[in-house]
Length: 156
Image 1 (cartoon, rainbow, N blue to C red):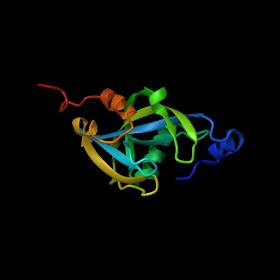
Image 2: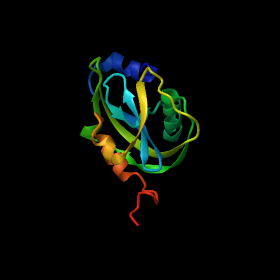
Image 3: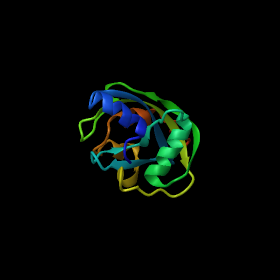
Image 4: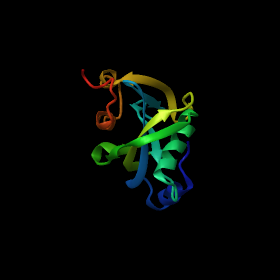
């Protein structure tokens, strides 16, 4: 998806300099597996999400981002946490630098998901142990580690 008009207007003034943006992240799981997308621009796996637009509620943004990138509808079941810092810094192929502060939402998938083939080249379901071996955005390890544990995750 192309940059928003809001980000375009800022980029026209600041060029490729660092821009801090509010973001959202969808933590979609099925039992012990998490839905990840492989980004077209980097080839890295990550949780699905993106930037919050001006005037948009973060909860609306995460629903919109998942729909845009996967065609899927989701329901929100809670907030996992809020994340920022050095691990949330991205430099895009065009040289734009962005630092995200992202609210991660626990979500349930309500309809089938398929990659948009623009931002995401593929989707996959992965267990925690398999995620560690993927080429990925490493900040997702923190988010997945913080994700609420289901009864199937709890040792008996």
